Image (tube, rainbow, N blue to C red; front, side):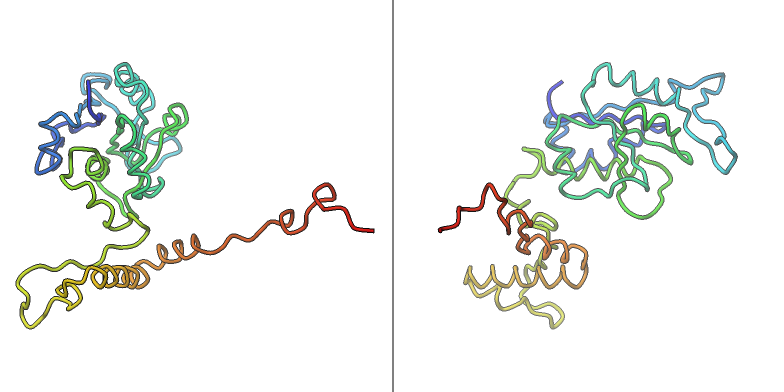
Length: 255
């Protein structure tokens, strides 16, 4: 199968492709730029009710996805997708960033293990080298919505999904800054005008306004991004070895 692949291990396969089947991502799906396959966890369940979970060891609320059930599902998926990374949407995971999105887009696809319980048996995470990824500091009812968000972010970077690939260059986070404000007609709306620099026809002025406004927005709204950007621009200090050459490196003294 050609194209980028998204595999969803889930109790609710009907949730996919969801919003990914519409607009640009939906058109890319129709054109074969990407494909998705759902894998129902119930198919690997046990007993008359196809149970996939059990009570947490040590006690506690809710239920935990069993290791043997999740493992069987993952093994079945990896028969056809042996080299794809396995991602578990999880609030305790690394926070999704544009750089990690680009990393996943550069691969051939992703297997998403979408949980619906208190958690997944930790032995699954250890045995399969699962990559836990969070889309923010809040709790969802399951991993499916988070997986949809991740795939949407990934698909936008694939060739053939967004018409103008250059539009990625000035989006938020592309250069470590938030994107500048956007305006269009009418020129005046409810007493508010478009900034004069944007209607001046002077490309240098437009670029300058956008750069300045982008920096100001980032500094005000995302001081963490601003601090990281400033830190990246600081000149790196030379190591002590670089400052003081060793005896072997030191030129001989003149006598």
